[in-house]
Image (tube, rainbow, N blue to C red; front, side, top):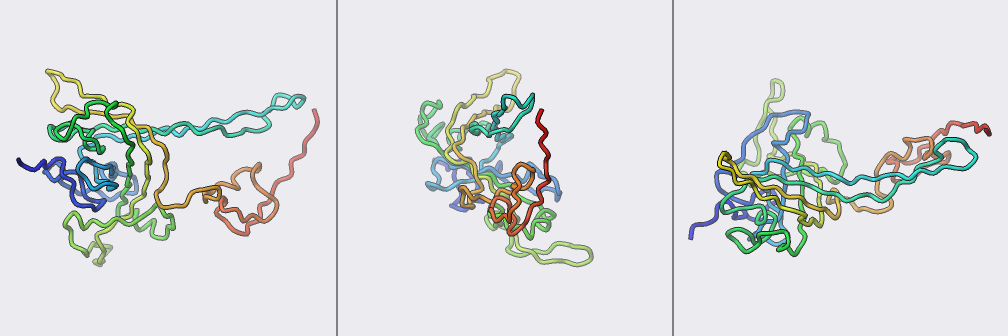
Length: 274
C-alpha cells in the first residue's frame, strides 16, 4: 500500500510537518515589521506521530484564538454620592479557538489533531474523541524583527532552527554594501494552548457549485501560556505602577512592576465630604 504522503509525520523536529506531499512545500515571505500570517505556524499532534510531539498543521486557512474575557464588579458606598469606589476583577472566562482547514481524502481534521479518523480509524464525531491535546502557535519573526528584538529577555521568545527544511547552516545576506553571514534561524514568539478539547467540527457543505471543501473546528482551551516561564503569584507582568490606585509610596521590589528599587511619587488627593 502506498505511503499516505498527506499524513506521514516527518521525524520529531517541531519544525517538521504532518505530511510530505507537495501541498506541504515551503515558500518565502516578505520582510516586514508587521506580523505576516504567512509566517505563523500552528503545531498540533497528529495520528501516527510520536506521542507528545507536535507537528506543523498544513493547509490551514484560518486560526482564530479568542476569549479569556474578564469582567469587573463595581463597589459603591452609601452616602458618598453617585460614584464608583472601586472595581474588583471577576473570574476569567473560557478561552477558545477556531480552526479552518482544507479537507483532503487521506487527511482530515480529526487525524491532524491526533485522533484515528478518516482512513486511519472510526472517529467521525466529537463524541468519539476521548482525550485532550495541546497546540502551539509560533509567530515567526522576519529579519527586521529579529534585529529589533535582539536584546529581548522574554523566555517565550525562542530561536527556531530551520535545518529541517534542508537549508544550509550558514548563508549571507546583504546589509548596506556588505554581506553578513547568518545562521538559518529566526526568533519566534511562542503561545502554548494546553489541554484542548474539541467542542465541534463542522463538516464542509456538499455543493454542486462548490470546489474546495473546507472543514472547521471549535476548540475549548484549558490554559494559555508561553511554554517556558514559571507561572505563579510573582509572575512579572508589568503594569504595577500604571494607576495612582496601585502605586505605593514605599520602595517597590515587587516582581510585577518589572522594576527594582523604584520609588513612586503618589499624588495627594484631597477628599471633600459631600
